[in-house]
Image: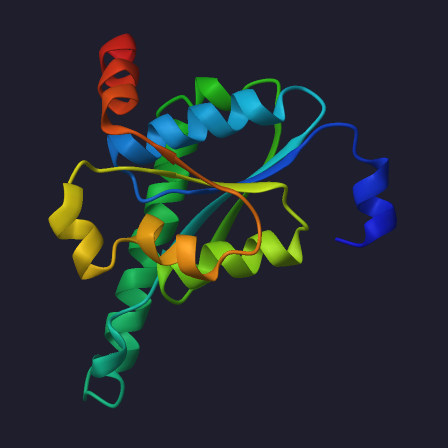
Length: 160
């Protein structure tokens, strides 16, 4: 998005990661509230087999399977009633690559104000192993909002 297009937008532009989990749904709800009626939300799902599979005999089929799974997740978000997105301008984006890199790339391309991801509650062990939120903290050039596990539980209970 160009600077002039960004200036025409009245509300915030938010990029949010989506993997189908309850944490991701809570992140989508948060992103929609942040964007409001005047902003935009880009819901991003990153797909792709691990890089060490490159060159494997069935790599193309595995890549297509991952892409198909990602498309199904994004379609399901809409089919299952993405109530949190009602009244908000949004786009769904299926992007190849690692989740953190894909989210950062979309945020840069869309001149987003922030990136939102949900926490799955794996704690310190997960962060040490390189969670998406942890990686984003190191590569992003804009604010990264991590929805804590407690808010995820509250969002889940509200939907039940």
